Amino acid sequence: MLDTRCGPIEVQEAGAGLPLLMIHGSGGGHDQGMDFARPLTQHGIRVIAVSRFGYLRTPRPADASPEAQADAHVCVLDALGLLRAAVLGASAGAPSALQAAIRHPERVSALVLVVPIVHKPGAAAGSAPPVSDAQDARLLRLLGSDLLVWSALHLARDAFFAQVLATPPALIHAADARERARAHAMAEHVLPVSLRAAGLADDTRLGKGLQPYPLERIRAPTLAISARDDGFGTFAGAQYIASRIPAARFIDYDTGGHLLIGHGEEVRAAIVAWLRAHDGQ
Image (cartoon, rainbow, N blue to C red):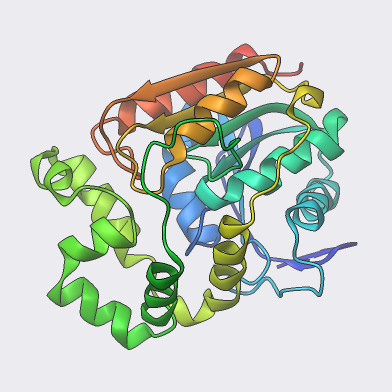
């Protein structure tokens, strides 16, 4: 637990070298963030994985907006004595990652957005049907109970992959052993979901009311990555933000779902190359 000027924030660190602030997605915490980013530590990257507001031991303040969360990300850098760091926002971690680059441009050396849940204009074609309020309510009921999540993982794991992790189960079954293990670890590490409930509720509300950001103001070199079959429809949003941020690149896949199954090694290699190319900018 870091005692920062923004309050207590839970952090897990691994590796040495280029600093990377890892911002997890919905249902996560520092553990989910480190699950994704730990392989990067083998390539000279220091991963700093945080728990966002309302996740695990990071308390939820009265203002839990992406803007306030972005300020808290910078408070983590301050507490660790870091002037600049790259920022990686995954899924529902993307809004606060974007806000960090907008609000604190001098602190963000590079930006990576993986399957980002972000605003896209209504004229942009959606890549997946929007999640209905009824679907959200069912998911929140499921994700409000450790017992229900445990039961779903043991009795209906394919449905959990499809509905909660927005990834076609057939892709996971067809993947190699390493990618299957990654997918199953992601599912299992949702537990204990009771310690993530406040953050999950905020993320669900945020997803229903995503706002446009002044993307043209972002100066950090930005890498956006998504798959067309992501059940959360992040493809269209990732494509849009990459078209609006001046120094951006978009890596797109036809398949992979929200977990980018089948592309784990390729995605990690692209992230490492991006961070190295823009170290210190």
